[in-house]
Image 1 (tube, rainbow, N blue to C red):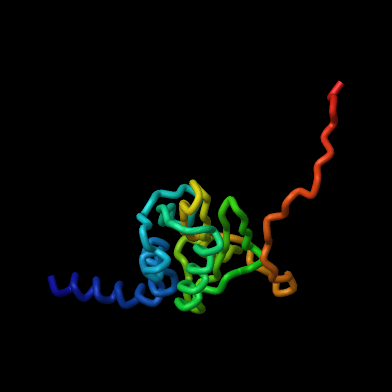
Image 2: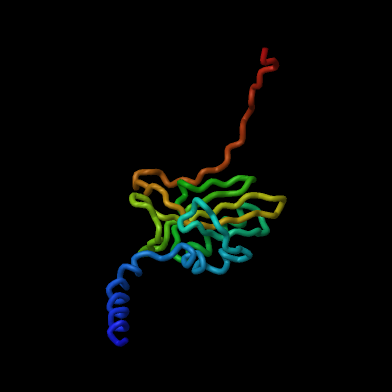
Length: 163
């Protein structure tokens, strides 16, 4: 039996550095700051890396909730990618680069894993919040980093008659 233990230890030592290269998405989600995970539960998400995410309802406006997430996630080392941020009365969507040195297991070749935060307004002062990791094309450094705001139509001219 000692030879099996020695073999198991040797395999663990040999694979140890490989296992440290990437973290499971569910583990990373559970390590997010408590302020970000508050009132959220694990959920199956077919298109997310690892097919998992966190989902639940939170109180407040889209602006308030995004501000809270910005504070807690930036303190944890996540960097918002403003070019991928949109916000409006309907809710918001924002992506965050993982802290330096963090790799997410299951990320497709040629993509980078980002933390996606999306909120959808359910009622005044009530939002559904979803957090998950997704693979996206890496941002080029030449792309402008500006936040997208929802635009309001200035005036639509609709035909009075179709025929």
